[in-house]
Amino acid sequence: MKFSALLLMCVSGWPILTPVLGIISDTFGTQVVAIGVIAFVWLYMIWMIM
Image (cartoon, rainbow, N blue to C red; front, side, top):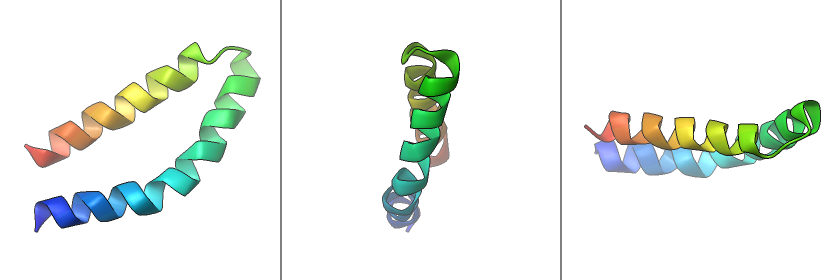
């Protein structure tokens, strides 16, 4: 049950996160910050599984 909820969050959340990553990259002028956001989201998802 937890995995299906996580999968639903990934599918529905990625279309929202993609423009946010673009805005962050444009604001800071580098993609390193956007990669940090992706790493944060990935770690959050791993934490949700545990």
